[in-house]
Structure formats: C-alpha cells, structure tokens
Length: 93
Image 1: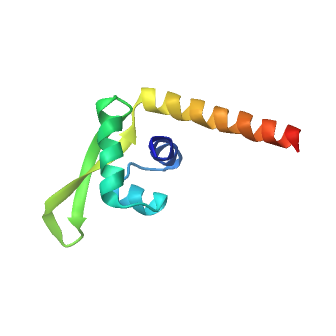
Image 2 (image 1 turned 90 degrees about the vertical axis):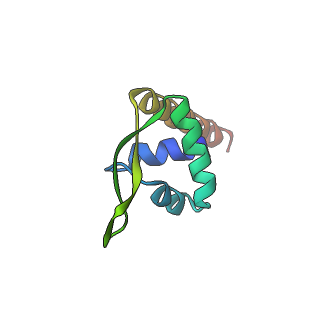
C-alpha cells in the first residue's frame, strides 16, 4: 500500500486528499489514512495545504498531501525496481 500511495502521489498533477487517494487506490479511507500517517512520520510525504471537505462549507477542511524530495526519490526507485522486474519477466517468457 505504501508503494501505491507514493506512486499515485508521484503521478498526480497536484496534491491529494486522503479521500482522493483511497478512491484512486480502491481502498477504505481509513486504510489510506493509516498508511499516509506512517509515510508522514517517515518524512516521505508532507502537508502542502488544505481544502474544504464539503464544497459549500469552508469550516471543515482536510489536508492535501504531496511527496517530499525523499518521497520522490523513493518513488523513482520503486518505479525502477518494477521496470526491472517486468524486464526480467519478459526475458523468462
């Protein structure tokens, strides 16, 4: 799940909320929130701002998450590892 979150944020054109991430990953928002908390404490993602939870109510806001430089580096390493695995699978076939 951590790798999926990092790769999703790396591909995203803007920072994302927990709800947006969970929707894209097809998981419950609680699961995504738990993993985001872990990534945050490891310094791989950070809060870049916030947005209203409901479009017509500005009083309740949710954080927007984006990768830190360490998170971008790890996402690049994950992508490279996946490409190498795919290439080795192609060689075996």
